Amino acid sequence: MTTSDTITRPAQWMSTGDGGAQAVHDLVLAYDPTRPFAAELRFVLDAGDPDAVLVWEVARDLLAQGSASWAGDGDVRVRVWTPLPALCVIELLDGITGRWGHFLARRVELTDFLQETYQLVPEGTEHVDIDAAVAALLTGGGS
Image 1 (cartoon, rainbow, N blue to C red):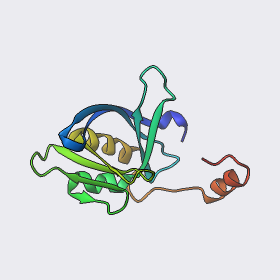
Image 2 (cartoon, rainbow, N blue to C red):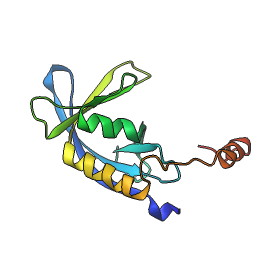
Image 3 (spheres, rainbow, N blue to C red):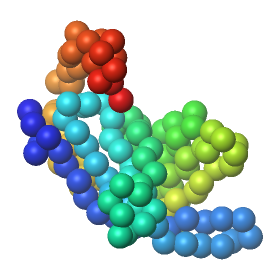
C-alpha cells in the first residue's frame, strides 16, 4: 500500500464548553492503511497553514463501536448521543490540563468514513510489520 491509499475526509464538529458555550471546529478524519489499527482526528487550527493541526490518534475499533453504542474508558470516549441518535459524542481528555473536550459529530459522517477504512483494510486483516517498526525506531525514523 502507498500513501495515496490514505483516506482523508473533511468534517465539522461542534464543541460544548463551560457554561454552554459552543463552537464549530473544522477537522479532517484520516486513515493510513500502514497504521491499520488507528484513525486520526486532525483538528485544523489555521486554515491558511496546512501544518497547523492538532492530531488525536484513536483506535479505529473504538470509533466503530462508539458510533454504534458506546466505547472507551480512557482518554477517548465515543457514544451515540441519546437525545439525537443522528449524532455521536466524542470526548477527548487533554493530558496536560486534565480537562475534557466534548464534541458532537454527525454519526453518518463517522460511519461512512469508517466504512471506507474497512473497505481498504477489512476488520481482522490488519497487519503491522513489527520488524520495520522496530528498525524505524532504532534509526530515528519512527513517529
